Image 1 (cartoon, rainbow, N blue to C red):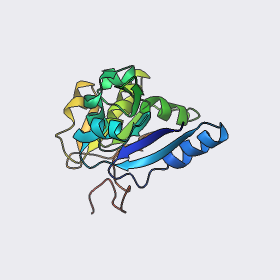
Image 2 (tube, rainbow, N blue to C red):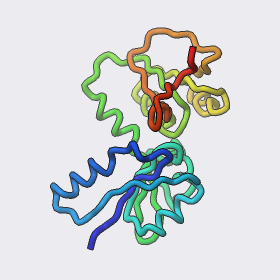
Image 3 (cartoon, rainbow, N blue to C red):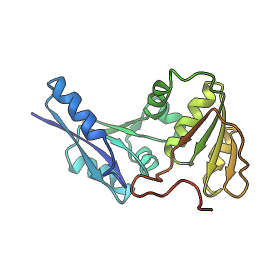
Image 4 (tube, helix red, strand yellow):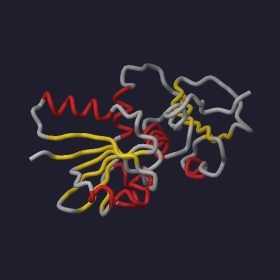
Length: 192
């Protein structure tokens, strides 16, 4: 019997997750299939997950906070940040995790001398990365289009900016967590 997995997002057509996961399934002889699910209304995540008969799923923009709310139980790092990007069907219960920060830290493991980081955006991925960077003793600044979502980061003692009050300085790493560029050629900054 095949197990079905998916990635939820809006947009989601850009996601390379099916290519990566299906390649792993094939090479490990796992009877499973991984697909994409365009989800326009994040409040429908749980019912869509179970209606599709999924064993598990990943969640991308803009539904990571909706995924947290949809879970019957949240475990690990996700409990700390209020953001879920990985869902498991465990005996009919929706269990949520967050793997964003650990995966990102693994990806930059070989980078040296990172002390000051600028994160573009203030959504779910930004929350996960900011928390993890701070736990690693790094200095974190957040730059977002509007101030409305910055209070979470201010409570973490991150330096917070909008484009109106941002002054460029040197950063060791700039991380774009916005959806800019996922479905068009827009940049995560205003045009000049």
